[in-house]
Length: 225
Image (tube, rainbow, N blue to C red; front, top):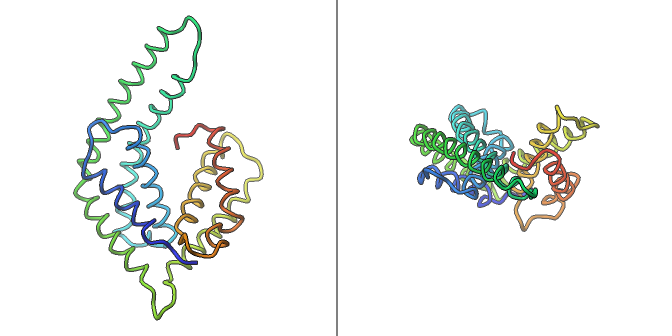
C-alpha cells in the first residue's frame, strides 16, 4: 500500500490556516472544514502509530479542545438548517424566534472557540509544524522500498474493518461510536495514493460500502459529528 503524502499533509495545512486566521465568527464551511481535517489528522496519527510520541499526544490533546469547541458551533449550524427546512403554516413567528435563539447561541460558541484558539495558538502552531516534519520523514522510501508508514496504515485499516463487524445490531447507545469508527476507517483509506492499486484504494471490504454506511448513519443520527 502506498500513501499519498499530500492528502495527509493537507489536513495539517488546513488546521494551521484556521489557527493563524482565528476568525471571530467562522462561517459554517470554515467550521466544517476545521472539524473534518482535525479528525483526518487525528486518524492519520493513530494509523501511523505516531500517537505513542509525547509531542504528538500533546498535539492530539490540544486539537481535541479546538475540535470540540467547533463541534458546538456545528450543532447550531445543523439545527439552523433543519429549522429552515421545516415549513409549518401559521408558525412563522415561532420559526423566527427559534432562529434568533440559535444565532445567539452560535455567536456565544464562536466566541468560546476564538478564545480557545487564541489560548492554544502558540502551542498548536509549534506542534503542527513538528507533526508535519515528522510525517514528511515517514513518507521517504528506504532503499527503493515503501516506508513502514504504509504497512502501519494498512494494518490499522484492517483492524478497524474487523472491529466494525461488531456490534451486529446498532442501538441508540452504540450508534454514535460506531459512526466515528466508520469515519476513521474511511479517513485511513483515503490516505492511499490515488495511483496505487485499486484493492488498496478501496481497502478491506471496499471503501464504497463504508461510505454508503456512513451516509445512512448520518441520516439516522444527524449529520454533524
